Image 1 (spheres, rainbow, N blue to C red):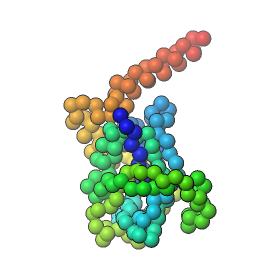
Image 2 (tube, helix red, strand yellow):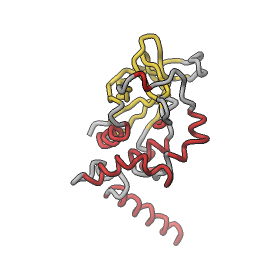
Image 3 (cartoon, rainbow, N blue to C red):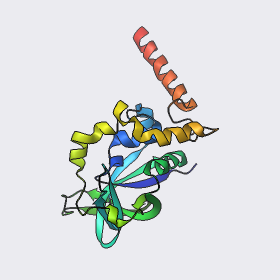
Image 4 (tube, rainbow, N blue to C red):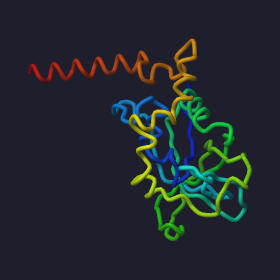
Length: 203
């Protein structure tokens, strides 16, 4: 099964590891053997600009010839992860394939000091619900992390993932390939980890 790669634009909710993990693995704090499957690298996406979505905790990007958006390229995603992400993003976004550039050195917020490296083909989510729904200002990721992350993780955040969870439950098979919560791979690895912990304690 081929790995998938995606560009998530900073600042954005999926830039928060807790949110990405909750979508892909069903837990905002997955064990290391799950979270370690993903590789995250800083990157820039040319020919797009980012806006704040009105009355929302998340941003959106739209095409713009003379702009660029900084974010991260995440590799190690599976078809099942993308399936979950599609549901999470919803109908206001369209998943498209774009070319991002890996940053070998990250500069300041204006882009000064950025050193670009290789180009990579990735998927990302572009806003299609109308530009009238977007504000001109940027979305403040620091503010989100400080004041609003609680809306997306823990018990308070669970409603944000209901559509993804319901879709998974409705499947007659496990679309995560055993990697999600209660998947056979996850359960086996957790059992193995627990056994190793018992052995360590005995020794």
